[in-house]
Image (cartoon, rainbow, N blue to C red; front, side, top):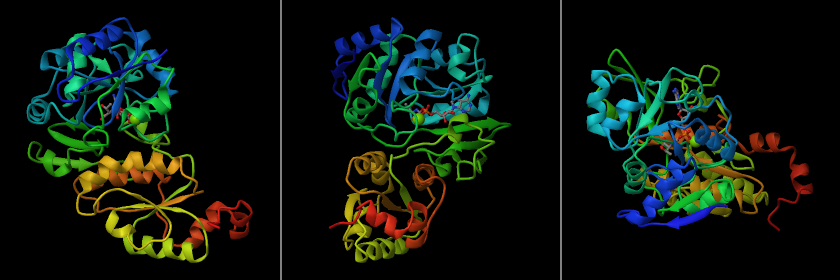
Length: 363
Ligand code: TXA
Ligand code: MG
């Protein structure tokens, strides 16, 4: 049985947060909003509680969880030590969407870190997430609160779609703020490597670290040697084909050509790019604000999933600032390839005739 608890996102009601914290302390699972995406939390010190997260999400056991803390005191229970360069970064960027890898403490059971010697830790900036951790008094292990491979949840209704009946509590605190998951970094000899790009950009990290590298994998390279194990799995995927057209002009041309040929599809993009298209459209916001795009991205993928088109096109974004995180998620959602012609779509979906038989035509 799942209980839905609605709270105020900015001033969460104390009595409701206490109730959710009790569930955490009794070894249960609680989905809650963070500033990035919703997380599915359990007591990070409790092996059995953490196991329930893997079960509810159908998450592979070799994909470790992020541990969420609400204070630096709590951090000292989670990791062995904090190198000086990392501490400087955490003082600047926490609470906020930055996850760091540190040497794990003995108190964190192996199931949480998938047997790795390191633990991924972050202090979320969302009032509801912080209140839940504070009221519980224990660090909370929490991956994104979606079923494995599905787009991450940015609204309580997404969590309900994926996890209703599989978790104890879902806290509805409205829409999350950023819409893409935290930036994950690894720091060695004062040099930071971005393993997963997120809301904190390379440019911002450079205010604290002399060098900030973006791992090849975070930029879209194939995954065998992924440093964040979860990055090798299929991610963020709608259940129907989604094609990434990196170039916006090409995206418009391909969509118009498909419409001329009568091939029904959905075009996902910013309002300025979508305006003259004839297909179904899902808007990601205005083209001049990539933070708005990030916030709407996963919701758009879920909307496409439940519309009647057999496939969708989405256009690319400049890989700077938060654009790097957006493109990283898009590449994963599209299987890592960028297409530049209708033929590539037809070849991948089967022949045009095949398409006709499946009656994906718009008439
Ligand atoms: O914004 C976020 O980070 C959200 C919210 C809920 O905090 N959480 C999130 O968790 O995105 P999840 O599980 O969906 O992604 C965690 C990523 C995975 O790719 C996992 O492999 C990686 O972090 N990770 C966790 N522990 C790690 C470790 N010790 N070493 C390397 N990568 C690790
Ligand atoms: Mg996830």
